[in-house]
Image 1 (cartoon, rainbow, N blue to C red):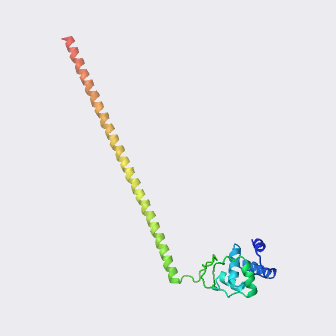
Image 2: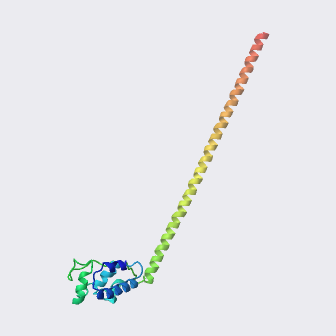
Image 3: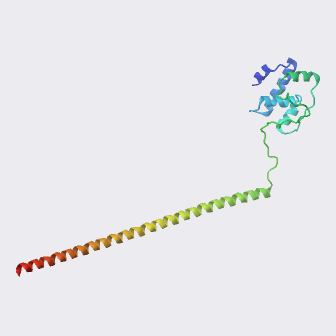
Length: 190
């Protein structure tokens, strides 16, 4: 992308080489994944001061409004595409997109202990909920098993009652048949 930028840029050769070197060094300083246009804008905003631009990007400085460029630099800067054409020195620009995040202070020991205690309490609460859910599941399974046993016992008792009723009915039918047989025999004899 740097080569493409250099081809597009219509800055005089003297300034172009110096600025190209500064841009390349800034990109090296920022590291991989650095945005070429962003780095160029920061350099322009800091009057092509490499150290100031690096300080702004890396968080070591807070240069928002750079000093006005020298007359020779002003002509060169006016021909380069900056992306800042619509701003004046009195306007406030949007925050820069550095993507840089840093934690300056670690939590103090008391805060760390409080967070650890809260995490432990949450872990214990979740564990207690899991145990309670497992116990509830076991109770429900035992109740379902007991209900199933009771249902099977009722079905067996009903089947046994029906079997006894059928036997009684059969015995009664046999007794009735015997009585009728004896009564016919008596009629024949008699």
